[in-house]
Image (cartoon, rainbow, N blue to C red; front, side, top):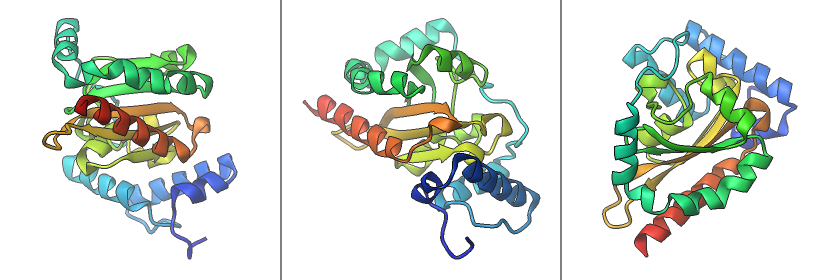
Length: 220
């Protein structure tokens, strides 16, 4: 086990409970300053280092920054993603509902502007404040696909105990930045999230493809 680097494909090949236990062991050892059985994936390890520098508590609560309904509506109207959001939702809507997940779209500051998908999962997501109007930057909610993708500038998948904040460790999420075709600046993030049992590494490729579709529609 120690000789093979941890990867999404390796996690997917494991029995679900075994993968969860391994990630928990890695997280607990890393947070305690001990040597974990395997090093975290590089994108996760880098994020955890940022969390420690920022002073984010692993036992903290998520979603401390919430927009007013008026601000949420204003940001939806003024977001460039508003022009292509229907295409994004149509591209992923059926998949996320059937696979017991939800689709989340944030702006470039990690503020959730739109959300849809499986109704039962959306109710569960309310419990971790993964809802419209809430900020999901790393500083606000720790290591998570939306916030970490914004920092890294690349598609990111965060599974189970790879989340820094304990309340998120029963979730899995994959997110990809959407960039302005004219100048490359990040306009927002497309994310698919769900219970940890819905994890599959192909979700990362899927959200990446949808982000590219959104960029293509913006270009046209």
